[in-house]
Image 1: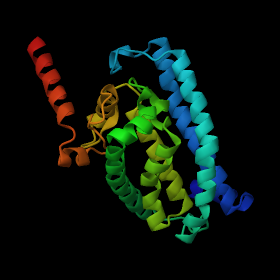
Image 2: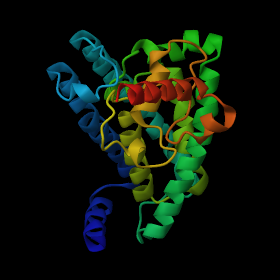
Image 3: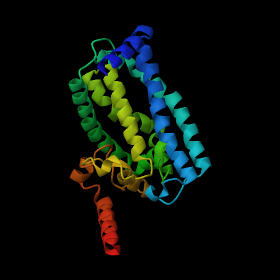
Image 4: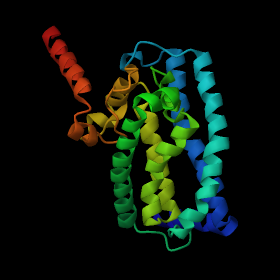
Length: 266
């Protein structure tokens, strides 16, 4: 496996420049993972498949789904791509590289763990601030246009929010100056996580059923159902920040009532 990764990476660094890999390569990887992981949930919703696992009974109209996709393409090409290109000098100055040797799996794992921890902290506070009255009305309400989220709505947001909360994702890598392959892995994991959190389905195989403190779709769907500035459940990947600061009490209370009701029925 290691030799295969090295062979592929050798091809990439031989045929493409650092700038092309870090900017164009990162953008293409992001778009591929994002749409390939998010589009199936639109299909499930339209066809009515696996409805017993759907968290909300309400479905989005094809027009609403189409609007989301159109806006996303506009934001990705007009905001995300230019941002990647503009931040390239910053990342290279902080030590990002694409050359050999590749980092060890221990180094990659340690950095990814650090990124999750710092992203959770920064995202929680940034997200909570976005739920203040003025910022919610003028910025964050765009993301909450979809009270019944589906995978692709994870990145449907006001351009200012893309920049604001995007900082939470890149601050960890900016501090450590990782190898590009580590940055790509972090990006893939982060995209898959946020698409899953917005997918609108809670499956028996969902990570939140097995991984302690992992939020997942059920946790974040509650956040979207309440169209208020103080809906709670502000966390990104792991939910310990909400637990520490008591901003998940409404969700926990509702979940407890639901479990009690189900026990009485059995």
